[in-house]
Length: 112
Image 1 (tube, rainbow, N blue to C red):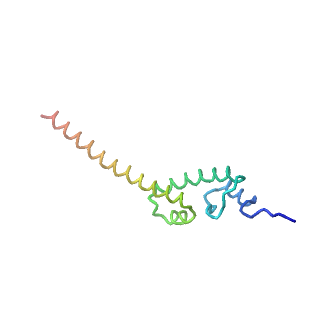
Image 2 (image 1 turned 90 degrees about the vertical axis):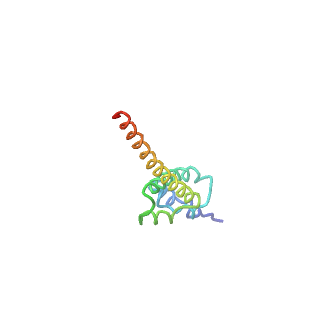
Image 3 (image 1 turned 60 degrees about the horizontal axis):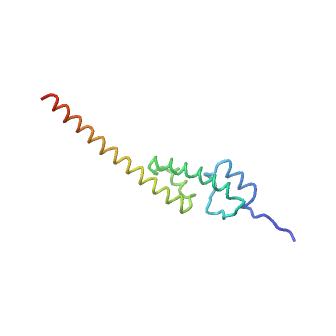
């Protein structure tokens, strides 16, 4: 009886994950203790790339192609990153207006 290692446990996938984890379609892989460490490192690298995409607003063609390779968890993190980025941008816009207004009031008080 010969036992063959499934392709998704083979050196080709492991090497691809090590070389550029963002190009491997993780949903096609299954969980296995042997791959746990490699998958953890791949997830970390993909998370960093995902957050980079959220900072660009996710509107580019590259972002669309990238999103197609994400699993459900990564998509959820992507959505959270977009929402967070939009919230920070909105907060910055409001804070800037308040600071400018406060400076104008101070100038008027000093001029009076």
